[in-house]
Image (cartoon, rainbow, N blue to C red; front, side):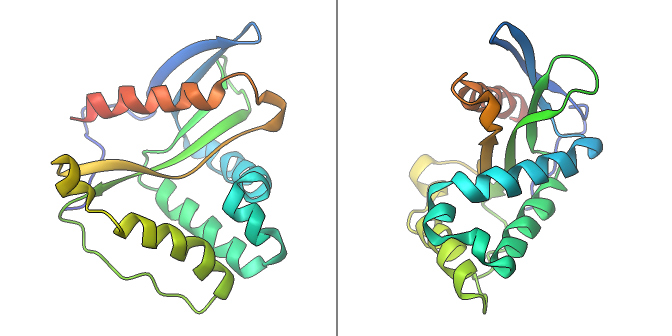
Length: 176
């Protein structure tokens, strides 16, 4: 069964507030207005800095980049992904986490692609994720997974990634 966000939890919801560098920040659901800035942050910095992307040199391969961007955009449509922004209206996105819930009853489709670079990158992720049965290992019916966490370099070193992960924990406890 495909997971759907509970209708009892409003969208967007602010999941966590904290302070970094003396500035009040919040982690919230990604709104429609934040999708494009969030995706551009991922394209610019995740593809550049995330170790497998960096190692493969994904920025030299437009087709592989397009596959990864499509994965993010498709996943964001589930309205589970979160962003970090200053705790005031209209603030720019400074951190993003693209999230998905995987359910035991989801139809499993084998990973297939003709793109050799995308096969290296996502094929490795797919292989690792299939290497263990998380449902059996932890006795769960569904679990939260991510397809990218990135923080704007201007904000790195402030613990924002950690705060985003804490917000994920709060969300999981409310979703069940």
